[in-house]
Image (cartoon, rainbow, N blue to C red):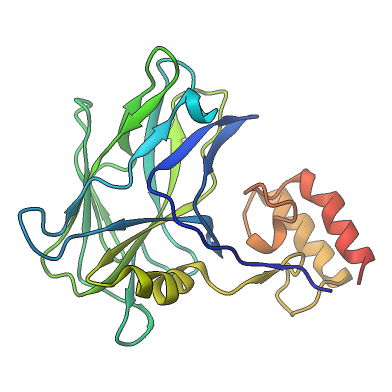
Length: 259
C-alpha cells in the first residue's frame, strides 16, 4: 500500500539541539507544506497585550537531552514559503483558505546585538533577518523568549511564518524549515481543525517525487536530482528525519520494490 503520513500534536516551546551535523527541532505538529513541523502561538485580541506575544519560547536544556555547545549563538531566520509564495501567510477562516493580507508581524529581541527589528509582510521583509534568540550558557542550555507583534490592520484568522534556526557554530548546519502559526481570534479547536491543516497541506505520498500519484521508476530521476540539489520535498524524506539525502535512498528503493 502507498505510505502516507499525517500526525498532529501541540507543544508550547520550540525545543532544539544539535544532532549529528545540524540543528534538530523537536515536538512540533507534523505536516507537509514546506516544513515538517508546526508550532503554535496566540495573539490576544484585547487587553494590554493586544496583538503581542512572547510565546512559544525557545528551549534547549540538558533535562530533555537537548543542548548546544556553550557560547553558541542561535537565531531565527524567516524563509519564503515556496508553496504559498509568501513570507507572512494568512489563513482566512471566512473563506477557509490561504489568502493575501496587509498585516505584518514584527519580530524583536536583539539582546544588545544592534540588529534592526524584522517586519514580516505578506510578500516582503523589512529589517534584519535573522533575529537573535540567545547565546547558550556554560552548560549549552538556552531558554529564551522573543517578541512578536501583529500589526493593527490584522483580521481574525491565523498567521504563519516559515523559519529555520541557525547557529554561529560552523560545525552545525541550520535546521530544516518549520512553521510557526499564530491564532488571532480563532478558537483553539478551530485552529486545529481548519487552520493547521491549511498550513500543513494534504498527506503526502512518500516517494512520489514527480507528483503523478504513484511511486514508480519515473520518480527515480527527480529523486536523484533532489538529492543532488540539496533541496527539500516532503515526498523525498522517506526516513522522516527532516532532510532529503543519501539516507533516504535505501527506503526509496524499498518503496519502488514494493510497487
